[in-house]
Length: 327
Image (cartoon, rainbow, N blue to C red; front, side, top):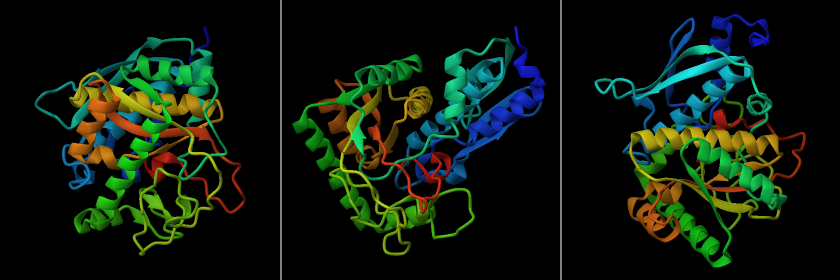
């Protein structure tokens, strides 16, 4: 057995901490605190980064932290460490979401290596796709990836239902654009051209309003204050899907984040990307409607579109999801 490619255990854990920090997060806020030392990692929620208007119950915050947890786990496995994970380990410390230690050595499998390598390639997509994710085997594999983490990926294939979801996204986006408090909160995380801050959504990572906007509108990040610079490409909406869980508690949100990151890495490994539409899931009545009409009483945690992005041009900045955000 190869022993972690001769990487000392403390170096494997340091690498895993860094991998966790490259996870997707709401508005690129990176709302986690990744601590610990040696062969122990702690993952906590950063209450200062909770979106009080958009995410008052901290569902998206915990989901983002779940994505970071999966990044840590897959990095350790790829480096030959079998992670032992305790989620929500201390009821008296609700902000502590997970503790990760070593359960011994394990030969990394090819899937672990591929998913870990995909962390560097995974990108947020905003706008239309070159073509949808029409490969049934790949889509089935993404569903399997989500199921392994305790969630379900539910593709929406009926055109009328797709149009209904796009209408819900548009309605929620309109509400958010006219709500001043939400606008101010979002402004905190939108960065102008050349801003060196690692967190938030940068102008180079989103298009100008209306530039090739699909039926599923993206957020109006700039609100007239910051101009989006990303070039809009593509003609296809992509394959629409909902990520759902059987329950809707804190543990389910943490599991949904792990499922989301796992399927995103699997998609990136196959050459596909995802666009996210969290707007209607931030409105309680709209989320309840989606639960009843689209999820068979499961709880929707993410609405996304999947497809093959058009090749990037030289003017495009690398938009890594941990920086650019899931919303």
